[in-house]
Image 1: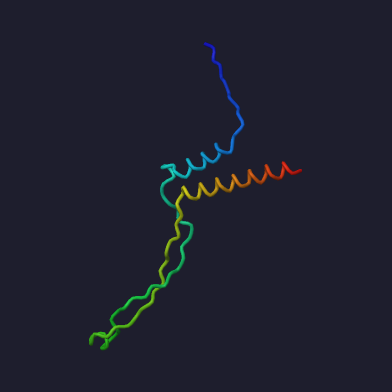
Image 2: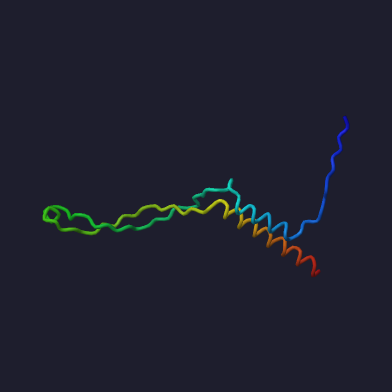
Length: 99
């Protein structure tokens, strides 16, 4: 048997790159989010007072510090990276054109 491999090389157009970026942003396999940091957040709650005052029904406020996660969607990270790459590509073309 004889196999023939045909490779087609064509110039990438800007519309192809933008279509690829849009496809990455809407890709369902990139669903979900990733936690990039946790930040402390102060929460205040009304609680019964200590001792006899609490027994009499008096209340006080208590402040606690909790860790809240900061999450970003994976598809958004990929799309932002693709747009940064596109910007670098455009800057490279611009610099080389003006030399």
